[in-house]
Length: 141
Image 1 (spheres, rainbow, N blue to C red):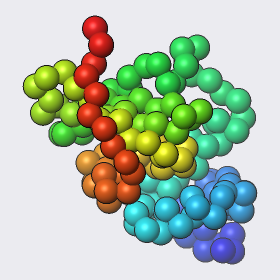
Image 2: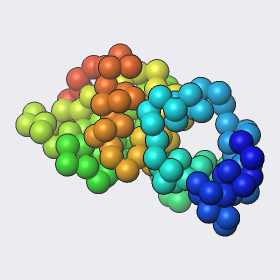
Image 3: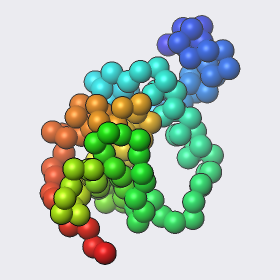
Image 4: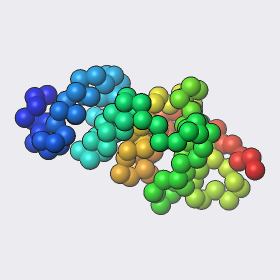
C-alpha cells in the first residue's frame, strides 16, 4: 500500500505510523483485519495500541491476565486475556450464576482486535464465538 493511499484513509498525521506497522504485522493479523472487516477507526486504534505496546508503555503494573477489563458493550461486561496461555475470558451481563466463558488458543492479535473494536459484540460474534474452543467457568470470590 502506498503512503498516499494510506493518507487518504487514515489522514496525513497517521499515515507514517500506519505504513510502518502494517509492514511489520504478522500475516495472520492482516488476514484477521480483512476477514472481520475492521473499520478504518478500528484499524487505527489497533495500530496505535500495538505501537504503545511496542514502545514498552505499560499502563498498569498488574498483569493483564489477572484483571478484568470492563468494556463498553450491551452484552459483554468484562474481558481478560492471558497471552502466555492464549486464553480469553469473557463475562456477559446475562450471566445469572456468576460465570464466564473461557476461549482457548486465542492469539494476541485477536485479543487486540477485540479491544479496539467499536462493537465488541459484533467482533465477538464474527471473530471469536465459533472460532475457538470454549468452556464455561464459575467466578471465584
